[in-house]
Image 1 (cartoon, helix red, strand yellow):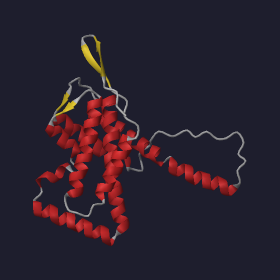
Image 2 (image 1 turned 180 degrees about the horizontal axis):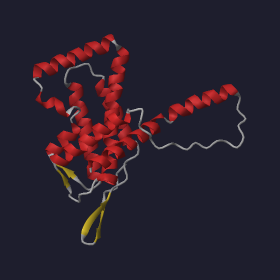
Image 3 (image 1 turned 90 degrees about the vertical axis):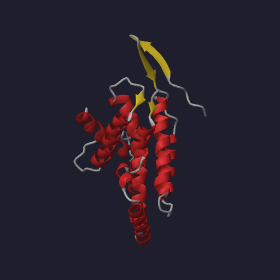
Image 4 (image 1 turned 60 degrees about the vertical axis):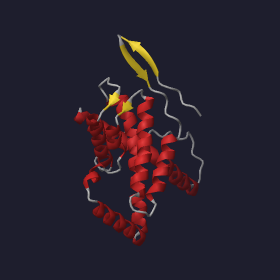
Length: 219
């Protein structure tokens, strides 16, 4: 399905771009792709594919807001670990092989590591959208490396802050039925199912609360 291009309107001689609505489910699909590539047991390949997925997400969001990225800015945002660029090739190979062996020996740890990678990808897309709609102050159309570093720092710090027990996200209002006629077993099953279904919303609210807190102190 084709997406609606950003529409430009003029207000006081300043061009203002109305971002196109995000395509439904695209970020979720790309996050699932990142989870899939994270499970590939070949050194370097997961990181390179993850960078491609992250780069596609960054390009999609910036273009919908009528913005563009320099190649260096895209690299800053797309790199799974921006600190890894200066590592020696042999050290990276040793780390990659060690991680694969550990994941085989401890399967649950490997699953958690893959899930964490997927969460990072989702947070990148969700919080980058929030940055453009709520935080960005400059009217520049092109995003350069300095702004990309700032964005990346806020998002990475927000992801860590979202894991803090002291963070208080916005609460989700759940309406109670006028009369609950369910038996006890059905009530517990419904509660478990609905709690699991609201987990993505809970994660989003924690990310947003952490992002707003970090962004307000960074600006």
